[in-house]
Image (cartoon, rainbow, N blue to C red; front, top):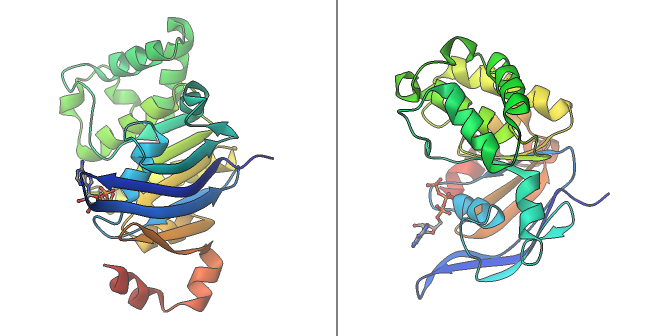
Length: 237
Ligand code: ATP
């Protein structure tokens, strides 16, 4: 079985000398729930931006389910759902319209899109909000709307960039539950986070990235058994 994600010697330099990624290697197996942990500026969003074709890489290779980013970009994009860090939908649109419009980008017909959107809104506790303008939603609800939007085309790999930043603990827990169920149903998940607690509660494997380098890449169990984690996380900050 091809890995869900294989990154080899990935480098990114912004401008002349901002070496955001210094040649990272990562492999995420199909069905995995994988955490990319790192402090501010470590290179997490840059890595995700490259995988999702939002940022151009300087060197290295990226494969998603065996599809090469350089030569098979369309297939790569079809397999990925992205929940970005920033809200990037039109907040004046009603929730349902945001989802239906997104489905249109993937060529999903309106009936199927409506069915999928309704199902996702129910699972994500947004059903009552389906006719509301997105600007009326709380931060946690907007975050869940972005998860629904990312899942409309049924990607095999869901990538979330700090999905629970600024979300209160109760909503965070309900998002963890939803993501765990999604993963158990077969979707590979990668998330970036600052919180070890978040990674620990959900993820099987974890890579820690610091100043553009992967400094640890192991199973969550291994990490927790071999390291004084609190000290380690403090060290990389
Ligand atoms: P955060 O947790 O704060 O989102 P991150 O781990 O996602 O951080 P990146 O956003 O990937 O880190 O940034 C990695 C480094 O690259 C940082 O030093 C950042 O300042 C720099 N960087 C990111 N985007 C750009 C850009 N467009 N131009 C110049 N430098 C950038």
